[in-house]
Structure formats: structure tokens, C-alpha cells
Image (cartoon, rainbow, N blue to C red; front, top):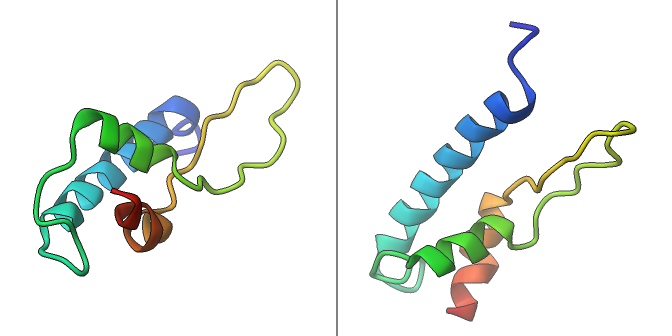
Length: 79
């Protein structure tokens, strides 16, 4: 559908990444943490080394795109 984008598209993507991150966090070390992330940790994960989105059009705002590979390979090591 051409009208599925912006917030509608982003919500599904971020929810999916959040579920995968929480699942990966529960995997025992060295891959995961062996526990669930806290709310603050999840927020940090979803905004960690976000993928570049480019410049938004005039008058538009654009959020960050979570980088799942870097969350697991780099962010988990900071916790």
C-alpha cells in the first residue's frame, strides 16, 4: 500500500526490533545478557547507533532507525 508509511510503518518496525532485542537479551552470555532489559536499557538499545535516515523534507520530523546488529554486538557489551 502506498499510504502505509511514516508513523504507521515505523511503529511496526520498532515493535519488531524491540521484541528481537528482548529475546536476544535473554540468551545467556556471551551472545546475550541472560536477563530481560529494563525499560531504560530498552530505550538505550533502540536509540543506540541508529541508522542514518538522511535529511527529512521541509517541515517533517524523522526519528531514528534501530540498528539490530549493533545493538546486539555493541550495546549489550556496555551493560
